[in-house]
Length: 293
Image (cartoon, rainbow, N blue to C red):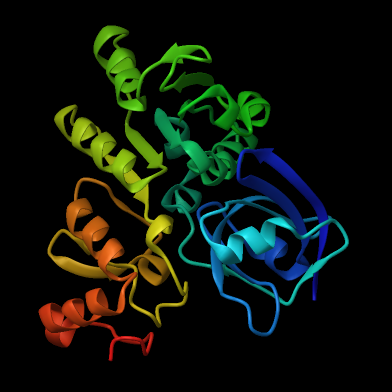
């Protein structure tokens, strides 16, 4: 059992939990995720690691209520426990394996949308701890849906916050802030990391491709099982078929076929849709979920 040491509501339908998971905390890296399961019959829920404390053996997760399982999870309190808390899973952010001296010469821009702020935070924090400052853009629909603002402010080189309705700092989409920084202010970046809703990552990638700015995206939003068995997170990257949970979750945003991924994500939710996918994808269809018949 994995004890919940802290349970906090960050915003409407968005929750943070600190979980005692010493083995995971000892070895996890930014970009990786865990799978949480509340009880023997509970759904497996993949969640990107938001933060970790190696000394105390604590993993921090942030999640949004999107269905029955996450609504049930939101009801858990301090002192309750998860039946399973598995990880770290997935590949760590590529920059964690780079030479630090070379990394310090790079100028990095992070773009976080909504709950995507949670997986962006440990990456920016890791860089800060290694003496590397990165610029961060955080976007949300309204001020009330912003999360981890103060935490991000402590580790970001420059923090730019924008809301769709203009209720906090800037008004507009994150893409407008990117344009302002690069085209109007003349800032130059070597790489952009964008994490958030699929549609946001798609349009950020389209823009950064025009700006000739290499971009990494995290496809955590399309994961279901989280171990490579269900095949739900199948995605085409360039000319190759990848699975977000085992090959990623981070990929070259300029190579990801977002339209295909989003359409597949919607179809996978119904039995009829899964049958169509099985027919269309033929021998390349994964089918490990056992729900395609």
